[in-house]
Image (cartoon, rainbow, N blue to C red):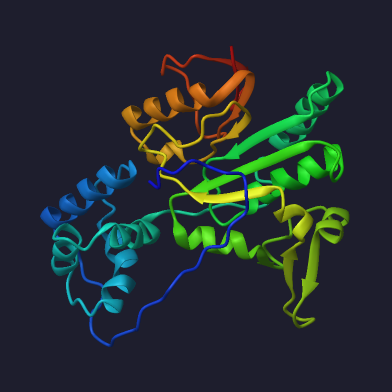
Length: 295
């Protein structure tokens, strides 16, 4: 994790692709080699791979192996463990991380968010800080930002959103903010027209997020398994959805403790519908399934 203080200013990121050599094909991982990958990935990301994921790991690291002209998984593992440096670990985690997301995923969360924000504004609050903890390729933070604009209007309150992910590849796509027609299908048509610019050929258009939306968001790389985090808070709302399912109970517990630290009293935590804090001795009050409030 880049343990630098978060400043709420937007910043571009770049990704460099290496040459594509001709050697190196995906190969099966033997149990011993898979176990070494599994331990390294858990140590560096908190992602707990279970037995049976050998084919997944082999396929996902295959491209990087080809870029490095490495012919087998043992050779790449030695490269990782013998001084390749943090940047190569980032390449590994980029390959392993799952970035399944969509605009308005679990839409009732955004309806509730709008209601909460209106209540706070009506009570006199003028400054709002939110965090999308697993931003993936940007659909969630852009949906949150649109919700902010629809609730408050532009330039009427001081609102900022921090969006983080462990994958630099995903963050690069987030910063670009350009999506296919299929990806933007869940967005209501009036909002699509209001907050996106259509471009490209008529039969295969691309939709680019407008700058007024981008201006609300700061994108940063962050490893959720290595608290304490560089932001001090207090935050009003945290979206940490569909990521804790990849962590074991120890990583989840540390993450929840850190989220609790940086949320203000009365602040809200949104998790995925497939996730639950039940049985984790969480210091949050259940508002409704997948929504919690700091008490």
